Image (tube, rainbow, N blue to C red; front, side, top):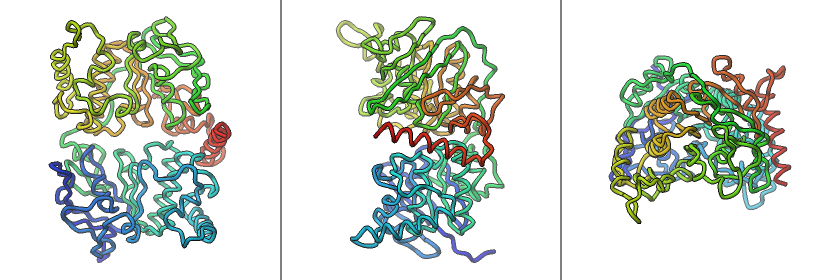
Length: 534
């Protein structure tokens, strides 16, 4: 038995926000030089616990011990002083500063910046070489890929001499090759004695990279196990409290006639950057076409154009009839009249009006339906009754149509949007990031609903950054990079490596090391976008 003190020990941590008990008497030990995963459903308390450790929140009760010493962490500066660094899911970088300026921001040696920058340049070069964190110190953040920005966040923490790193959903917007590179970086950090806490909902990542995993449910720690002694199925059951089907159970597709036909679609954003560069695709009745790609490569704009949120040039046909891509007949209302339903990527800003009630949100976009009219007024009683029925069938919790949308968890907000769009019996369902930030139990339900709609003969266009989801749900897969379709594959005839290469713009297996090939393509894309912005 070792006498080594834990790098982190939390004892009896409790934290409440009003009547909501986010953390309940949580105790956890994280040993030095290990990667410790923390998983749990939305609202399980993972982020709250890590925010207490990083000084964003103060616990109502309990103690924090770092390297065997009881430590008070009233703020993030105290956490940094205790050797703790945190890489957030949404990076905390100044976009128009260079890499070097971001690294020293808040950690300058004195009022004169020149000596700080000179010292930082040398330290940065050493850290980059030691941990495979290569990035141009003079490059502006806004011109870097997401993967390179993440490296900057890790460098920031290491520059501040962090021995403990907390990473929150670090692979959410990375290509598979970038995620593999990140895992090599984490492995290097572990071998150098660093301690890493990894918050992720991806069970595959937990199994691949962690030494130990802790499971949280409803604010409590339900289990801590060695990763080699568990399985994804066991972890899912611990998270949800019941057995969960981790694969999508569906029969082979029976495609019919083309429902959606897109030809040479082009779209330029308000900054003058061309985001869609001649996209052509087809979705048939009774099939799911999955669009894979790293965020920012045109998938969002594709959904916006097809959903009536943005103008474009090219040709789009629905059931053989061309639809308007500009003008007053190209809006969302016109799209819905043509049988197109749309579950947008950002449910909170595009799918819901957060202060409004669930029953109001469930009718938005379809409120002109004659069934909902009662003379000059709307038949609110009918709308409430239908909302109650949909919320019950879609297992929205709590099933209260009078609650404001902002009072539901992310997963339940997603179910409200899905209930509204799927229950309208559309010919085409456009669905973006269907399970982003959604509990593993809700993921199972959402996947079943998408497959059910497909089996009714509907056409589904699915956009997701989750390759597991794309591979298991799709009947065909198209990959986007830099506003173009790089290729199309059948799920049974491809794998994550090939899709990951296409997602980085690499159409053939490279002779050079994989990460170098991916970096080269991403660097070229960054250079093109920087030139367009200039």
